[in-house]
Length: 174
Image 1: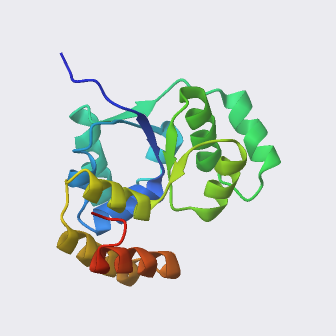
Image 2: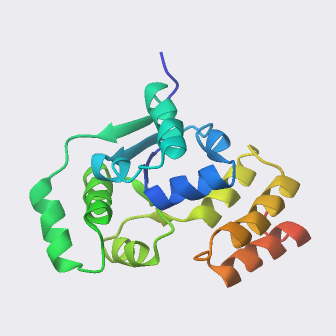
């Protein structure tokens, strides 16, 4: 029998892309959560290497693809939030339906999720959570935060620097 999983985490493609680029995807899936994404997000994996990495987590049962979407609700979100992609709207619907945390670095999606009372976490929150759960150490976290600023031109610079300072000086991370 599998151990109880604390919470369901709904993942956006941008988080997966960053975790793969930072070589953190394996440690991410070591957390004791149920990980789910939508079929529409899965369709965003067109690059062969990234798709094979995600497929490995699906095949191992660590990531599931939701196939029970309420298309009417997704279309409604899409009509009401023109700034979001259809995939983004599928994540909103999924997070609401499963009462789950949404993991995304997409600022527009984060803002709309907050307005819909969805708990949201970005990559910085993921790194902090991995550290707090002792899956990564301080030096590893610092290295990955520096790398994040180098590899992702959309990374939130000030927030990343603030978290770097927390790790470097020990404030709120012990």
